[in-house]
Length: 446
Image (cartoon, rainbow, N blue to C red; front, side, top):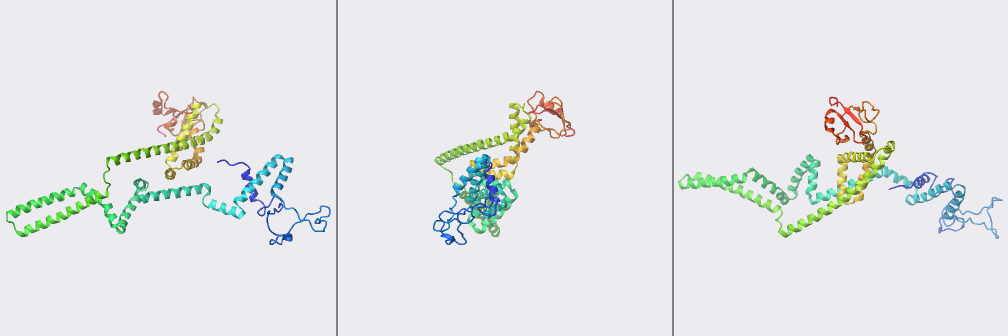
């Protein structure tokens, strides 16, 4: 968003100056409000005093034929401004234009801030929250929190995966404490939640198979001993052990049943077709949305980079179209790498993407790009050899003289498409993409 030069500044200057609301450069004339009540002498209002026409020859108030003082005609703010504007314009058109901007700027200022106290309070509030950028950040964070709370309420698996990835230790503690609290607050839900876990553990450990095998073995031994006339106490003990295994197996089967109930029932063929169609439509919509976001953000980023590189192009007027494209691409990648590694930025970006508002996403990216685009442009410009090379030991007089570096250059800054470029790299030499400047470095020192 562009701000009109002059109008905004004038409004601020006028608002800051003067000794009170409505004050002009020299105090100004009091502007009466049309339609206000009150008779002569200010009887209709407290503290009001009627003004009269003054006879310039005598300095006294003018009187009519009956000897009554002639009341001063109320000033029409619009006609007063127009008269003043025309007078100033006749003498100095530029001063008249400045007067016009200041007048209407101050009117706009008064609409927003009736008193200087209102303006001061607004400024203090703005500064408290870090200005417009700070308020935007707070708004983004609040929206992000609201989205996360909504995902939490729905038990969104993707949200839980994100928590586990961003903070594994915190996620583990939260889940452990959450299961304990669930057992106290909702035993049925607690059992349903644990059943699949316990069933999976029993199956994977081979416990169920072991119980069945032990039960069958005891049953066979019991039958053989009973047939041979074994001691009744021994048979009783075996029978008791068998009953214990039956209880354990019954518990395992109950866990299995709960686990099956907690899962989703198999979908019918028709339901599978509908689900597949919905997924396909959703995927198409999401792809289109992300494509639109990508176009908007890329356009904004390209514009910011072109603006930042303009000053460098002026320093090197002979730069070719291909060289410009290479430098631009380098700056784009450099900025992308910085933003990709910024955890806070990525988290806020995900939240805005979930909102589905492309303008919000674009503005957020633009704000963050504006903070690093100048430095990124300078870095890539130098790394391509057009400016002062980073870690340079000696300054080359021309492109055919190698510049010795303290450290090896970035691999992506070298023109690896040249014949023998890989062998040159191994030997500690290379040609920079942009300027075709030759550089070298000592592998034993870098």
